[in-house]
Amino acid sequence: MKKFWKNALNAVLIILISGGVAVAVTAYVMKNKEAYNPFSEKQENSFKQPVHLASYNSVAAENTDFTLAAEKTIHAVVHIKVVSTVSVGRQYLDPFEFFFGYGDSRRPRQQQRIGSGSGVIISTDGYIITNNHVIEGADSINVTLNDKRSFMAKVIGTDPSTDIALIRIDADDLQPVTFGDSEKLKIGEWVLAVGNPFDLTSTVTAGIVSAKGRSIMMGESDMDKITSFIQTDAAVNRGNSGGALVNTQGELVGINTAIYSQTGDFAGYSFAVPVSIASKVVSDLKKYGAVQRAMLGIIIGDPEVIVKDTDTKIKELKGAYVNDFTMRSPAKEAGIEKGDVITAVNDNRVTSYNNLQEQIIKYQPGDKVKIKLDRYGTEKEFTVELKNVQGNTEIMKAGGNSAEILGAAFKALNDNDKRSYGISYGIEVSDISKGKIRDCGIRKGFVIMIVNDQKVQTPEDFYSVVDKILRGGTDEKGLLIKGFYPNTGATRHYAIDLID
Image (cartoon, rainbow, N blue to C red; front, side, top):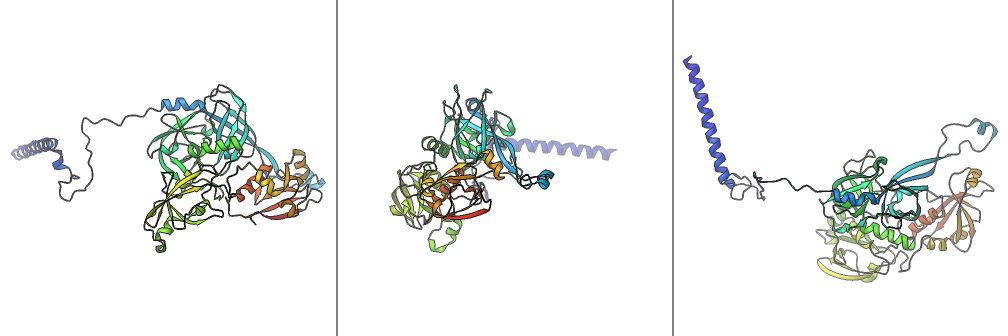
């Protein structure tokens, strides 16, 4: 029994002594925190880092209030419903067609498809900005406002290269969004995505700017496509396309366009076209019907390859490396050379090709810009007069230049023609004058179905393909046209060289 009490007494003494030591150490640390700071520069073998110790007087970071931004934006964002006609293969064999020959039993069926997206009201007289992919191929566009009013919209203009479209409704008492400055956005800054995901109207999600000048692949290759997106972690899903990305003041800084996902639903990354680009595009579409693209006329090299190449004399690449020039390059005419590294446009810093593209797209052909560059360690400055792809400063109308080169008029097929020919798309050559169409042998009445592997349903579809080639927005130099003459039905192919 004595042994038991002796052991118990020892345990109590150990506890008391340990408690006393802990209290003494705590008191000493509170009196002189730095003595036990492992990151302090006064400690041997310490990490040389700034230390921020939380004290009992510390408070949590101030909560950001999103209510003002949401209130200012939600009435400017609309729901867009699109009805389009698509061709689908037959799922069955019609016995009447098979036995009695009522048409081609393998002919694709036409089917209505309904899609949805978002748009942003940008003026009191009904102009709305959205994504091109939201309204592309639409037979009808219905716009529903946040106050539940509904209107049919007409397309003012589209620009596939930036995935921006401008539509308009005939309405009043509209509340347009306030434009902000996407170039002043900072990484880590709070932003809101406002739209209609999964047809859930008037939805607001919050996140931060994760990156700027982000390059992503969107569909088919196109040298003219923008590659300078705002990346955020604000939740964006199907139906958010064309919606608003706003800052905490409720100012528009981007148009939500794409997400990175393997499932089609939000996976943590979303991308928006900067408003610095989108606003210029819609302004051109409203004024001219086509985007007036200013060209610097340079071909940018791969940064990783350039830095590794000892012949370039560049150890670290900070800017956009000039690898080559396009035809009729205004940059080359101004004195810029291969091997130069562009570092600024009008004193706005350039760190990559994406950043350079975002700067140049803000200007019109004919504008003069100040280009700063690094030429093997020496800083130089040039003034470049930007030009369009034709090498001049003339205004380009939608389809105007294409129509002049082709020398033909086209018209869309009506429903009776399509049923009669057994097709669901195509355009007819309605008139021919001097130009590429006549030179290649196409005659009046020819039905064009496919141009460069792309189906055409309207003359604008055809002009779009031609415009892209003339702008240098694709590696293709000509047209491969597939169609038929209604009186024979035999498929014919024609080739046109656009770049002589």
